[in-house]
Length: 93
Image 1 (cartoon, helix red, strand yellow):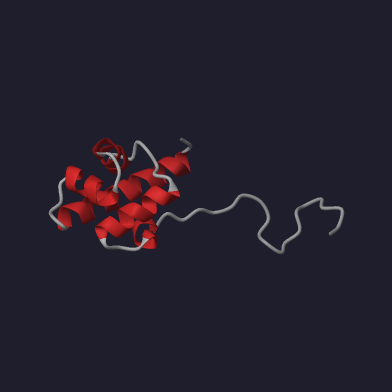
Image 2 (cartoon, rainbow, N blue to C red):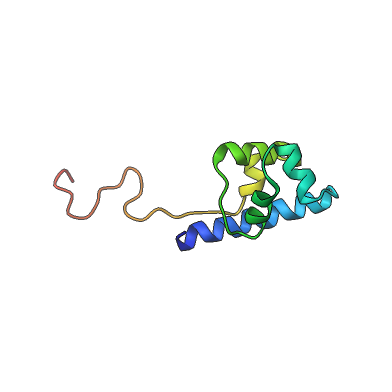
């Protein structure tokens, strides 16, 4: 996992854990609600794994939040020219 992916995984894991605890759910109960295995919940909460999009959708629904609420703050800045800008040395520029 690269540095940015690790950062997102940790942020996401914290949000999942906080929401689960707010709802007074065990990892087992959340896993059952989301239809995934309990060990996955632990891996996500500890930032060791990043859920697939379909799993993220299931977790958000089980936690009663939107997917974007779980990911807020995970900003990424693209490398290279911005959309609509020409790259340096671009022969078409």
